Amino acid sequence: MTQRREEHWSTDDEEAPEWHERITKDVIRAITRRRKDLGLSAQDVADATDELGCEIPRNVIANWESGRRKTITIPELIVVAEALDIAPVELLFSPALGGRFDYLPEMLSDRWSALTHFTGEARHSLGMYRLHLYREHERIWQELREEHHDAFQLEFQPFRENWPPGSQDKLDAFVAAIRERLQPVRAHLREIGLEVPHLASHLDFLDADLPPLNTDTDPEDE
Image 1 (cartoon, rainbow, N blue to C red):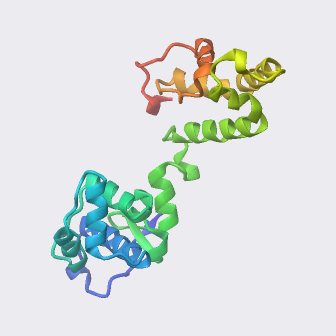
Image 2: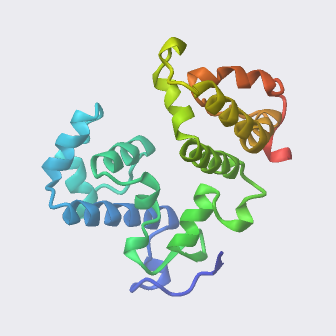
Image 3: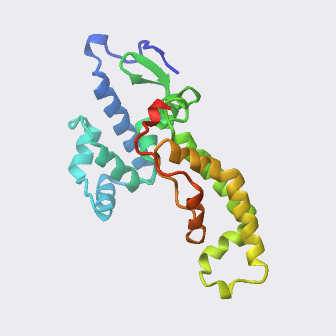
């Protein structure tokens, strides 16, 4: 993913901002670009963050964009991303900005590679992270919900006496498919000490099929 950093600042190396400052400057550039793309003022963004329960004042946003404030906290990143209707990680490693990016000090990467490394999606990262198990779980679960749409809809009809004729057979087929295709992933999550996602209330009995939650296992040791 990375290589030795090349010259990519107009200033001399001695005058170039430190790595942590470059990270923050890139985040602010991404925030500013997104704000302008949406046609919002700094006050609009401040008002949106206030509605989300964590106001970032207009002067803070203005100071970011002018360079007077050189830091942004994780909570600020989360709430401003929500206000701008964008994922926080896309502000952190914005592909829209283009060019190369210092994922680590003195190490260059393209922005998409940096983003996927950060989220654990990069191919070489899969041995380090377990997020891919959750993604695989979500993919299979979505497929099963689509293939067994009628059975999944029973979640919203909690009283069995209201179920349409043939519902039990459809539910049985749904459960069989879950046990065959999804339960292995759920069991693996349990075995390495991770919480399994909730399926639906009328499928809670499937959790009895899973091994006990192993809280003594460090996922990184797997």
